[in-house]
Image (cartoon, rainbow, N blue to C red; front, side, top):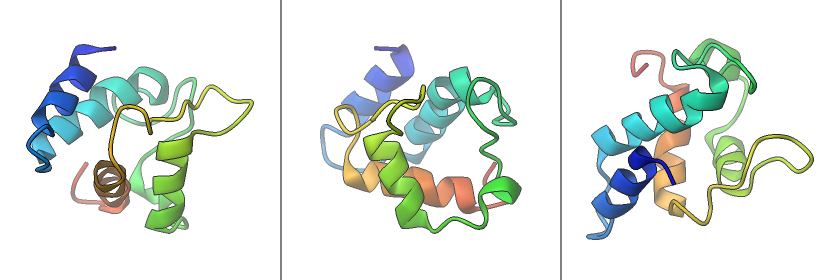
Length: 97
């Protein structure tokens, strides 16, 4: 488990979302496959302009359950539904990234 995941997981022990911890998780942990600037790498580009045709609930499902037979793992064991929803909305907000 990376430090960002541990930080994000411990930050949510009180059941409050910590946007800064979630942003670090996206840019460090997701960025390890999707590129630190989220422009793609092993995984596809996660910038808003390439995801804008997806609904937030679809992205939430991918985050939580991964994509079988690909390198995209399920994050459900590490983050909550609410955290995954926050990440999906964050990825769809052009000014956020």
